Image (tube, rainbow, N blue to C red; front, side):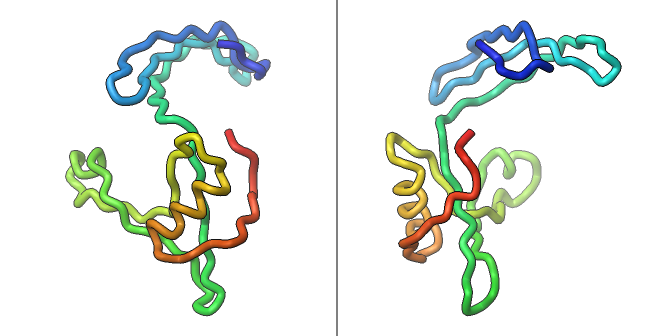
Length: 121
């Protein structure tokens, strides 16, 4: 893996699982504030690219959020429901097309104009 950040080097990746999506372990060196390099490792689950929209209801002057069940949250003693902005995986669609569909699917609101606030990661 190539890194474009001068504070990260020697990135190695190990595939741990590709059952549903991809789970990899990354080992790398991170430049600390004191100038020393420190080896670290992280696991990252890649489900693909996604998009999110924060809807604003002008009449009520509020943001519009959804309540979604998330099983991993449930396994930690919570009821499993989280409050979230409408979002979804791209699945070969453009971010704009996906977010219009997700906004309607998750909130019932039809979105005709979207103003991107940041580039994709």
